[in-house]
Structures are given as C-alpha cells and as structure tokens.
Image (tube, rainbow, N blue to C red; front, top):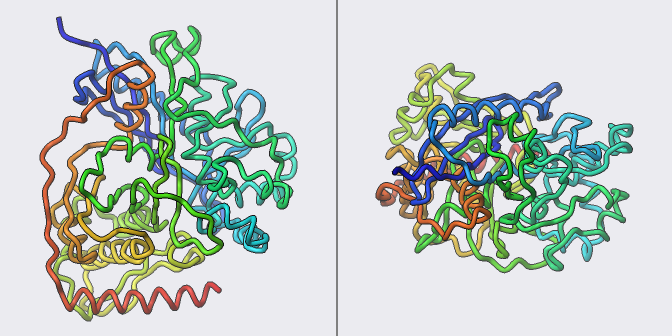
Length: 477
C-alpha cells in the first residue's frame, strides 16, 4: 500500500504564496502557488490587506489537495517574508494594513533610531532601514494613533497567517524578531531598553518561541474550514530566509545566494557582535545560530517591476542578452524601493542611464539583470568570509546564463542548487520536525557549476554602476 503521509509547508512571500507537500522520503508530492499584489497608495509605501494572504493560502491548500487527493497531512509548517509588521487585537485580527519590507515611509523614524545613544543602538548589530518592523511600528504610533493605541500585539506576516490556523496564539520566533530593529543580539532577546528610549510599548512584543516548536493544533471547526485533518500540529515557523537555510545544506559553499522577490546573500554560522556601524545583517536562524545577510532591497523586486514596465514574460527576461552587453550601453539603477546596503538610498531613483537610439527592449531587460547583480555585488562585499564557492538557489538559479553572469560579476564560481521552492520546503521540514519525523535529505537534481570568466568590460561597467549609484546616495543624504 502506497505511503500517503506528508507534511504541508506554506511560504508567505512578497508577491505570492507557495505551498508544498513533502513525503516521508524527502520527495515533493505536489506544489501550488497563488499571486497577489501589495498596494502603494503613496510614493514609497508598500502595504497590503492581510486578508489577501489568507485567501491565497486557502487557494493553495485547495490546489494541493486536488493534486494529491490521497494525501494524509500530518503537520503544517509556515514561513514568511521578514521585517513586515501588523497591528492586531487580542484575537489576532488585523486592525490596519500590513506594512511591508519595501516600504520607505518611516525614514524620519530611522533618524530617531540613529540618534539613540551608541551603547544602546550597537546591541542591534544591524543596519538601519525604514522597511523594518521597529521604524514602521514607531511610524504607526505617530500617524495611526487610534490603531496603535488599540493594538494588543504586533506580528510578523507569517505569525499573522498562523493565527488563521491557530486562533489567538500571538507569538513569534527569533528569526523574525531579530529582523525588526528591536532585538538585542548581545542578550538574544527583545531590546526593552531601546523600546523604552523610543517610547514603544513593550507590551506589543509577542512571546518568543522556537521555530520548530508546536504553536497549537487545528481545532475541528478550523480544520473543517481548511479541509485539513483536525488535531494536526502547526509550527511556530520562521522567516523566509531562515526557512531557505533550513532546506539547503551549505556544505563547502562560502556563500549562499537566494534569488526571488528579494535577493539575499548569506553566510551561515556567524558570531554576532555589538557594533554601532554594522555593514551587514545578523539574524537568528531557525535553530540557535546566527547568519550574516546582505540583502539589497532592489533585487528580484526590481526585475519584476522591469518585467511589468517592458511587458515581458520571465522567459524573455532570462533569455535577454545580458552576457554580451556592449561597454557603452545603458546602465540600470534598480532603486525602485529605498536601499539600505551599502548605504541608505531613498525610493524612486530607479532607471536607465545612457540610453541611446540603438538601445533595444531586450537590451533594457539585459541591463536590468546586470544591474540587479551589480547591486548584489556591492552588498556581498560587506559580508565576512564571502570568498569561495557560491551556491545559488531560487528562480534565477535554474538559468545557466544567470549563473554564468553571476560568476562573472562576482568573480567567484557559482553552483546552481536545483531545489524547487526551497523556502516552502524549509517550512515543510519544520512541519516534519513537529510531526516527529527523522531528519530528511531533500531529493534534488545534481547541482551545475559555472566558473567565472574575467572581463575588463564587466569591471568597467561595474565602475559606471558604482559611480551612478554613489551619486544617488549623495542625492539621498
């Protein structure tokens, strides 16, 4: 008799929700996804009605159950986009739109953080940015006073989605908490001294629980509404980057790059240190360790916006001539959203510089891909111990040209890990842990290696990109 036992992983992303069913043997049974868009009612704003997330999750679960009709789901794991913030009441109901990581409305609040005494601020050990939960929460206190006063807790996106399955359990995990600019990496807990200095109510902070612990079990009514078995456990879950690290084995790789709605470069197992001038992020993983991250805000998000503006399919973007861009061709600056690494840059500074009469639509797409990787290179240069083999995971890693351009731009060998939906798989592995499964090895195809091809042309174009980006930074000061 066929083994129909599996676990469900849900990945709440910026532009869509993905789900996967994972079998006991580490093979994926089924995957599904649903897209949504966030709202930008004013320049630099990024917010969403959280009900869109629940609708997408229910759609994905329904699709998976249609694809795997015999599935016996034993547990649910959840991960989600990091940095965002929702104000909720005692039941976990959202009382205002969710504010998301590309948002730059809290620029003034970031300056409040910057003015805090260095001995307090240094324990954050993270660069300041307006799209992180702390500044957004302070913005809400100043501009949405009624909602702020009536809020019982603030939650990260994945924590709110989990309340749709386990009502009333308003908790988070350390991977999301450490990405708020409200976390003390020295004492490994909420930075209550900072909150008091800023006037943020510490009562809004959710309880911290381990990522792979059980948040609760589906009651019969909730289970019936989701068409899931009653009584199955749901994990506390983790941030999306931590979920991806859970799914991939870093092995001999010095650096991991995740290409999706965002782009992140990661160094695993670092020892965070207090510093008033951090050049990269130090976040908790789904285990007890920390990882270093350089994450330009305008990575996959910028490519998606270019695709919309040029009315192109993703296949056209990935097949554009980015490996043969002439030296005198336009340079693309990807700053649709504000940037935080290596320097704080305000939103609405995206565009092409140097477009000529011969510049084609395909070349605009190609230079956008190049610009995304140039921005990633600037960010990676801030990370410790990044020299060596790079492993790439995510949508872009499937394309040999993207891997080759990444190797050329970064000057390091790049291997493409052929793990589909790695982030949702990480959530599924958390589900397997709370279901009592032994540790799994994810079934994947052989990784493909691209060696760097040194090029004066790329270095000259990167220098032009650097100069243009520095001018944008100067204008933002």
